Structure formats: C-alpha cells, structure tokens
Amino acid sequence: MGLLADLIPFYPKPERPVADMPRGLDVERALDVEMHAHPSVETRRADNGELVLRVRRQLHPAERFLARFVKVEPVRHVVLDSHGEFLWTEGTRPGVRLAQVAAAMASRFGVAPEEARLGILRLVRELMVREFVFLVRQDPKPRSGGPESARPGGAQNRP
Image (tube, rainbow, N blue to C red):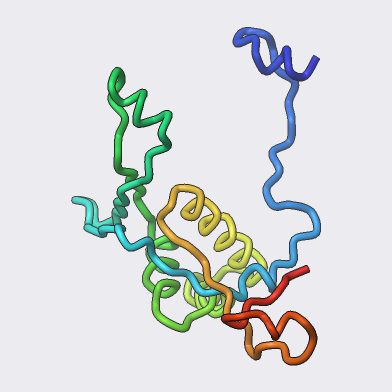
C-alpha cells in the first residue's frame, strides 16, 4: 500500500523518517576531496549581504520539449548564509580538501567537529545535485604493479 499512499494526494501518508546520511558512510573518505565550482557559476551579493550563486543548468531533452509549452527556467539560484559562504569561499580554493574546510569551520563558528563535517556533507550534496559544484578526488600516490597500472592514461579500477 506504500505506492498507493504516495499517489493519492489526500490520503494520510504514514510518517517516514527522512534518511539524513546513508548508513555506513565513511565521513573521512567523503571529505577527502576537492570541491570545484561549475564553470558557468556566477556569484553576486544580495541586498541583505548574502551570497547568491547562479548556474545555467543542462536541460534534459524532455525539458526542452516541454519548454515549448511551459516556461522552464534555464538557470538555478541558491542563496548562501554565513556558513554556506564560508564553505564556498574556502572550499573552492585550489588544493583545499573538504576535511580542512570542516576543521576551519568548526574552529571559526564554534561548532563540534562532527557537526561541521556532517553539515558540510549535507550542503555539498545539495550543491552537487543542483549542479553548482563537482568533486575531485586526488589519489596521494598512484598504485604500481598489477594489471591496472598497464592501462593507458594511468586509469585504475576502483572496487
């Protein structure tokens, strides 16, 4: 009856806990990445001083077809508060990993380090879904030996 409850708009839906973070998530590995801004991101200041990000989004072919009949917004906007602005300015610097940003955020805003790590993961996940940022993982040293290192371009299989 779960599908039926989701489809009927006025049927009282059972309360489901929203999964905040997946179980078994390795937070340290998740934060061991560099954050890069999407090439089409534009930044500006709102009248109240908050940072506003704007990105031109990629439209799915079905959205392009639908845009003939209904207005489809080709850009996305997001307004960042002081925590989000700190993540954006510190996290998009070259060579800075999200773990370093989490440690700096915990000391600057006086929050627990674990809370800062999870907050950064939540915000980065939302920015990734909305195509504002992408993440790059740099391996500290390439693996040597084995059939993976014989691939052209140094490509490696990941388990």
